[in-house]
Length: 222
Image (cartoon, rainbow, N blue to C red; front, side, top):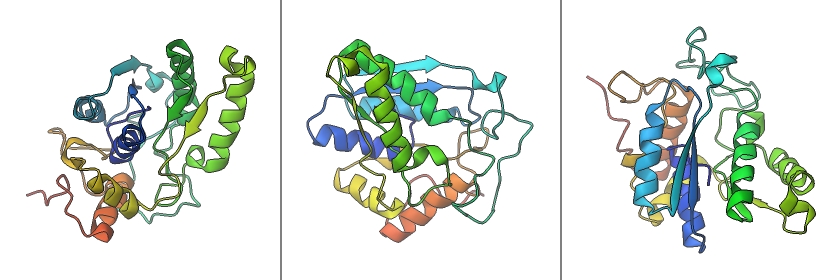
């Protein structure tokens, strides 16, 4: 399970457990400015009683190219949410890289299933969150791994890909998830509290509002 510490991956992991899977969680410390999410990932993994939780260091700041990995690029605030426009918070090939790492670990563990919390409805327009990308990666994995060529292909599960953010939150609440453990903000304040203005914060806030639920994180900042 690719576990970021956000509400989507938390919910996807809970769905995996509900469906009878034992979760080995993989989180990536890639130099993201919202590194607070790794603390959330650890809290989420503990709450889910994950069988294992591996945090890998992979410094993508040396490549840059994203507002999440370069301080020279500002995180957009209060901008229109247009899924047709790829925002500067897109990290080049991030899900391709992360799924490749998950694929390698899955092969080591003998696991035949990978879960990822991508969503193609209420999202920021990232091309590596779309169903066609996941299908293409799954096909590549069949060709590129010992397990795949020996007839034990990996299945990539995307249980949230067709759900709205509100539906994801409703699903999580039905599974008794504590969203106070999670972190979504791209540009948090020094104390780790969310900015409430970046795309991720606004999508999260809209989702909670549409779900008729209170977000334990996005309270007014004095």
